[in-house]
Image (cartoon, rainbow, N blue to C red):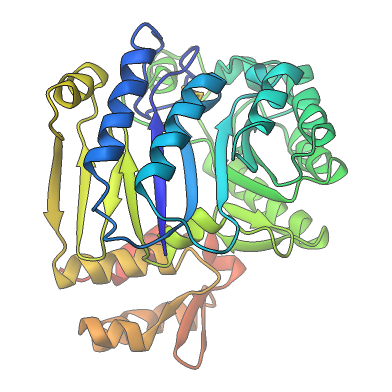
Length: 373
Ligand code: SF4
């Protein structure tokens, strides 16, 4: 079983905190779709015939694709890639300002059966601070429209830790998700990435910095409130009602193969990782010439161990000592884990080591302590 990811590198406007690969000019959209079709054909053997169980349109803003674009892409996928017998999970990331009734009904005519919606907040002040293209009314109505059209498998993205998000507003955002019965939530801390508009604004003093304690309190609140509402915290940034885990992202965390199509997209075949050129014009040019443009690295045992620790500790499945033993790092791992077992940030259940709620906010730092060199 394998996954297919398609990166759609266009956005209406740049959110202040974002460092993903995208362009705000849609001039090359048709050429980009044509290049994606070519890459799908050229990469048809990458997954060695393993059937697809998930397809994920990410970005950028995939909801900027029209129905015709999606029809072309799905036609090419189903021409070249076998699909698994169980129903495919087909997710499309969408922004609230795109999801009017017309758009949602168009999407209903495609194989898309899961929408991951970039809500981020239901507060006008937060949305303006982040420079999102939608407003608070659209954040609410797009979900109601999607549900009325029959999209039940929805995920909402919410950002916490913004200096504009009071604890009361954060509570209100979560309460809104519960009231709307959205079964999946992806929740990220506002991170100040280098070279973003947000980093520049903080440096200039025109935006307040992100406060770690403020963010940590909101993360604790996220864990408390979602647990009380019946959500399972199955990955640091992902929470779901039972039966609504993202199958696509779960397959990443469980080390399954996936193929990434589009500029900057990553692929993994179990042994090596490769990533496409992160430049729209260069990507299109190379595909027009019938060539793929990517870099590749074969993972060493140390890299495979470090990646396993990094992703495993973020999930409810934790890190399994038998798997770590296969990679040859069991003594290193158990020695390093002692301090975290002692301070209560980690727990052990047989061969499985996982983080406790207290350890989750520190997941990346704990993983880094356990890395091998
Ligand atoms: S819509 Fe998403 S990808 Fe586009 S700029 Fe905003 S956060 Fe980044």
